[in-house]
Length: 149
Image (spheres, rainbow, N blue to C red):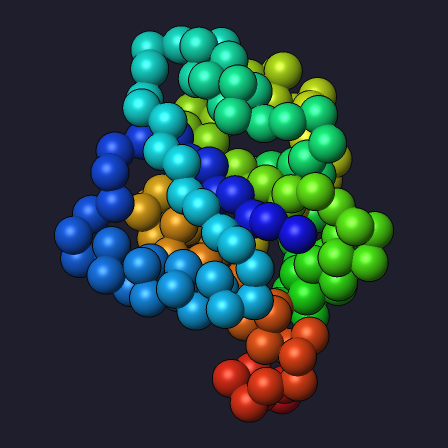
């Protein structure tokens, strides 16, 4: 299974980019991974079109939204495991823009998840998502990175 992270907004902030790159490299040991940035637009609908152009009909789409189902690290690892066992072509994580995503993206999403009830800057959400996906793989593989409490 391949992974695609899609986020709307500016390039990764240099302070965050190095850490994101580190986790993307770590994830790549478990699955092919790619990050696609969609430029911010005045219209959520135009952003939505750009996102949908990057998504294939065979993809499983997980939309990150503060109103989504809140999951923990083990829950994310279960999502990965389920998609791996279902022979999912590609798992796509979408981080919308500052004002959310269009209705077309919400309709296309196979799952809507929340990382937290807290609100984070988009740059940090990118980093948190990359770290949590790496953590989910280490949970599945029984590696020492994750220490359940």
